[in-house]
Length: 256
Image (cartoon, rainbow, N blue to C red):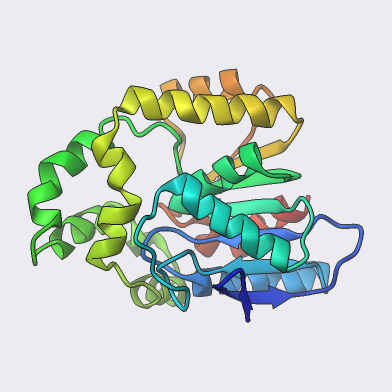
């Protein structure tokens, strides 16, 4: 199916339960949510759920710009066209940032951020040092070095295969979605995310942070200071993909 020009899997029917919108991470596509959607169907029957391919990913068309605020506008068009009102937005990795910006910009009832810190730290400097390689035919080396730190080896075999195959780390996606991190300071981006969280807190929007390991204490302090009611859940031994390592436990977080 297509909504707002984006490819999507649409399940369930509207009722009094908040609809769920799923956003995958950079280079992946909506197939990554398959295990969670299947678990959701078992637990919640026909709960309304929409899994989208981000612009430029999967079956969704490419764009000239992948600025995050522009991408969030495209996502909102898709959510609106699908007939969803104030969803819970579930985002993994890059999708966690997009889900946060979405809830600070458009109606939402909740955010589930899967293993994506909102402070870039030294990541921007890493990307700036790697920029010559990112712009060369050897750009895949940068992605592979990051993939090696995501602890895919901790996943069950089927989930490991999904991570390795349901992905297209194209050069235009890496350069486009990382553009702001490469060109803007970590302080400026951190202030922007802090403003997003301030809006989310003022609107009383529930925010869950689900991670595969204990968060850095300084980051956890920053997050809990910005969002005193944030729920932080660690699904241990799952690396960067806790939703794939523990789909049943993750689904209970969504439906709890």
